[in-house]
Each structure stands twice: as structure tokens, then as C-alpha cells.
Length: 106
Image 1 (cartoon, rainbow, N blue to C red):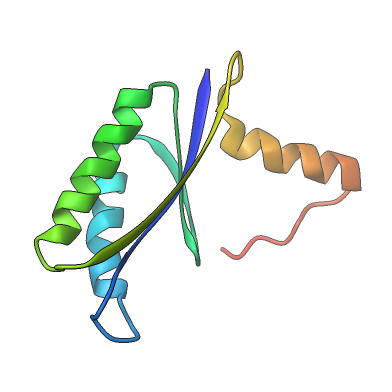
Image 2: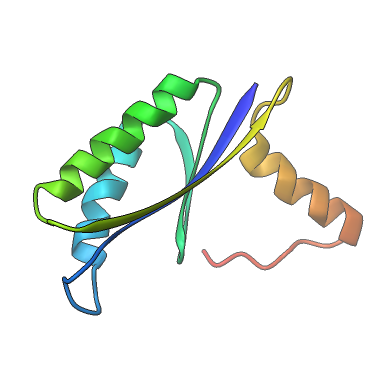
């Protein structure tokens, strides 16, 4: 089983740049030990366990809540039985179909 979870947590009323608040949530995700990818618009977390993902999201939310009285949260979950390590395999599949490596900003 694989759960790929896309999440954004954005504080409201904290000005245009909110990276100092988002960084605290990303720190929680990073320390969780789960596989993840950061994108400019959110973070994708992968796990084989629903409770594990929800626990990380809750800890991240609670961390942001320490500094922010209003938070917008968007969560999108893709559950797939019988598959694992889809963060990499989904990109690999596209590259194979296109017969080239896709642009990655490292």
C-alpha cells in the first residue's frame, strides 16, 4: 500500500513571505523519517501507513499553530494498494514514456 499525500499549510495574515513559518512544518516532516519531496507549492509525503502520515500532518499543524492564529490547509491523498515507492517510480514512468530525463531543479 502507498499513500502519497500532497499538503500545503499556509499561515494567513503573516504578510507576503511565509517561508519562516512553512520551514517549521517542513522541519517536522524531515524529522519524521518519511519519504517526501518539497515543491514550490507544497510538500508530497509518502508512507505505507495512514496513521503515520496523519500524525506528521498533525505535528506540523500544531507547530505552525504556535506562531499563527489562522492557517489554510490543503490535503490531497492518493491511496494505492499493492504499490510502494511511488515518489520516484511515477517520475521514472513518465521519463520512460518520453524516452528522456525530465527537468529537475536541484
